[in-house]
Image 1 (cartoon, helix red, strand yellow):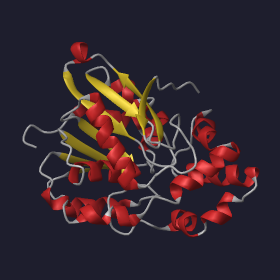
Image 2: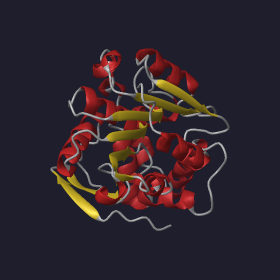
Image 3: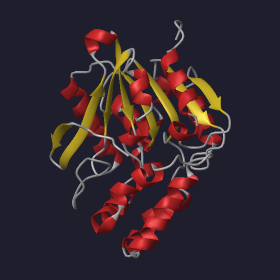
Length: 279
């Protein structure tokens, strides 16, 4: 499926790819940045970005090591490094106070950027997102503890594992061609190496430093969660809501971890509705 990122941003660890939707002069709304997680890419936003771009300028990008961005040995792909690069990307775009929407580990990247890299947001939406607490679990923990074993899987076994992992994230299933698009960056010897390289560096230790700061967030925050999320079940939404008590919390029924696939229309409606004037 066609999805192009036309712009480049150079970093010491490699080139990141990004794209802008909408014309700032035509839309007039505050810019919004969409932040993906793992093992996904900005391809997640293919339905959401054009919908938001009717009224706002929208920025999407692939984290280093993901999607169309550069993959190579030696890259620092930890959450702290992702946050530093996200902060630099915001500076590159000249966005001093954008709206930020983040999913999966994108939530941790957005929170680190806000609380530790000291970048400002207009508002923040987190959905089915890593934020803090005890989230090193399940298959993710196995990736961390046995990286060298997974790196040696035969290609067919690796691809079958990644496909199963991706299917586990959706409650309703993928539309034709979508799973193949998600798999594409992780295929072949270089893709397999890149897949386990990034998973082996994502650590709970990188979310702990900002946990005590969650209660200091004063900007408007919205939490959206799929009720059937099996990757980050509803208790993770409740954990975050308890620590950012002024945040809105919205449930989407019949949807799993990938709201972009399971409930794109409902997600877009939530995002285009904005925040209450009193927030």
